[in-house]
Length: 133
Ligand code: HEC
Image 1: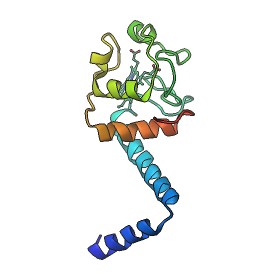
Image 2 (image 1 turned 30 degrees about the horizontal axis):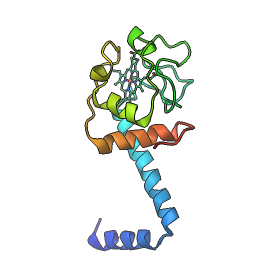
Image 3 (image 1 turned 30 degrees about the vertical axis):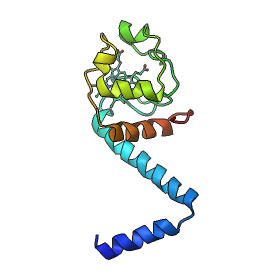
Image 4 (image 1 turned 180 degrees about the horizontal axis):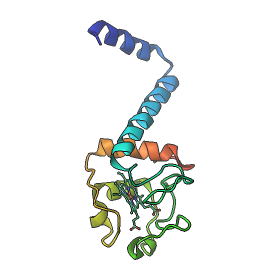
């Protein structure tokens, strides 16, 4: 992309009503989050609850009690943890799930970059009835 095109695109974005611009931005975050989800999570987690996968589906995970997706064979540790999947708990899980909950059968994931966490959270929120905070 040339500078001229970037300048024009920036000017166009600046001219948009701000509600519309923030919608574009939110949509871009969801798309980025979906791409990161595909790299980091998708091989074990379907987004869609009707799609069988190795891990529990993450549709509607925000606000859900840990270990409560029907008929999924959770570890004892997760099933009895009493965790509720708030955005903060999901960040801690993405950052170091095995440190957050020793005994979980989810292999260690270590996503420390808050921006990457944020994109994935925005994507997960788009699959949930509850808004990300
Ligand atoms: C190698 C496979 C694998 C990968 C990769 C993986 N997970 Fe998991 N995940 C699992 C398994 C297996 C469980 C069930 C853990 C248990 O029962 O202790 C789980 C459980 C979870 C839970 C708890 C869900 C519930 O119903 O309580 C969340 C939330 C979660 N994973 C999020 C993620 C996110 C977000 C990513 C990507 C950043 C990810 N996982 C990557 C396998 C994986």
